Image 1 (cartoon, rainbow, N blue to C red):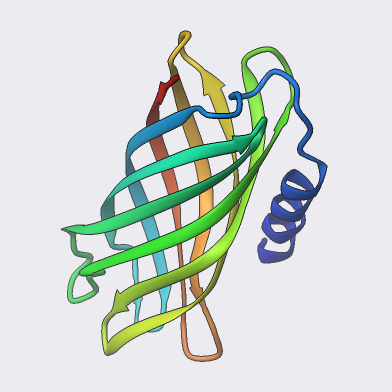
Image 2: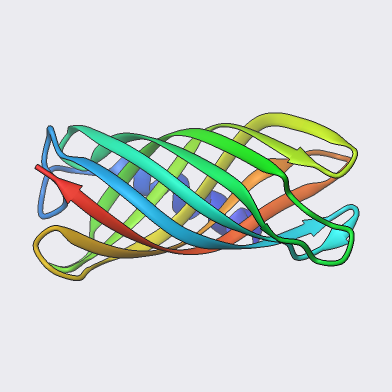
Length: 160
């Protein structure tokens, strides 16, 4: 699964071309629910994810995400976290874009804070002229001691 997400992420970032996606100069605000998966200690904490981004050129953006503590799975809880990503989009149709993200993350896991390389991929569905619904999977922390990733459903509001 990690190899598929990595390949999709890289493909979206590398092949993004100016087309039907958001235009240069567009900013967005995002709110969503992240369904987490932590392997050590094992658990499925859920978090509120808030974010913002800016398209520097058509289909290429910088984004920042914040995770806040929302629901613990037993003793497993992600207190907070953030990520700073480059995001590339590839228009698949008039209302659907494939996107990938790569960047730096910091997550407060049980046992301490971890930071490093983060990546993910997803689909963005147009829900009007200034709104999208995004579904993605992002790996926020991945090393020999533990892996934390989250499947997220989010709403993005585009500000032109």
